[in-house]
Structures are given as C-alpha cells and as structure tokens.
Length: 118
Image 1 (tube, rainbow, N blue to C red):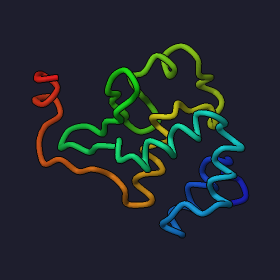
Image 2 (tube, rainbow, N blue to C red):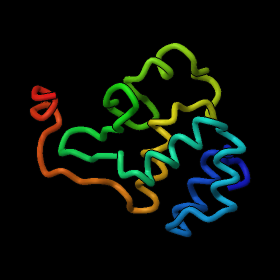
Image 3 (cartoon, one colour):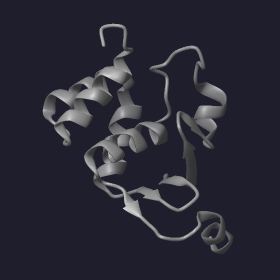
Image 4 (cartoon, rainbow, N blue to C red):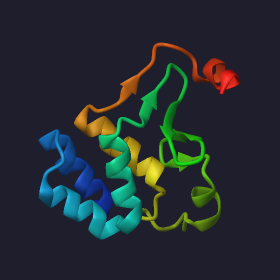
C-alpha cells in the first residue's frame, strides 16, 4: 500500500477501524481542510442517504448525487483538479466516510422517484 495516495490510506485505516478516531479526523482535515470538516459533520448529522439507484448527500442548499468520486455539486464541476486524487468535494468525502463507519441512512426506494416530490 506504499504506492497508495493519501486518500486511499485514510480510507483503508477508516475501513479497518470502522470509526472516526481523532488521528483519522486529523488526517482527513489535514488533507482536505474545510471540505473534510464539512464531510465529517454531514456524516455525524446523518446526511448521507443511500437509495436503490443513487447515493445522495444532503447539502446546505440542495441534495447532491455522488457516484464514485463524482458529484453533481458546483464545487466538483468547477473547482476541483481532476488530476489531483486528493481534490474531492465534501459530498464525495462524506460518502467515503459514512460507508466505512456504517453511518448511511438507507432508503428502500428509488431516489429518482423521491426527487420528483422535492
């Protein structure tokens, strides 16, 4: 794992521990700054939702669909360097964290159907 990027390293440690330790929180915020802090806050507040078709993070102004390392937010679209594996929006980070600590809010329904009512 010596060739792993810093994100893969903290993800692996978090996967192994299954919980956010002070060391892992420090690593995440050290690499990702405010985005890391917002992601941790979103996980703590239960704002990562998994539907049958999509994973969604409830943001401050909207809900954002996250697929892998991609997101529908403006930060992802305009501000991130696609060549930098550590440059991730906080929604993608929140999903990565929530999945590894088992803190996702699962909904047995299709988000595409729920979204019509929002």
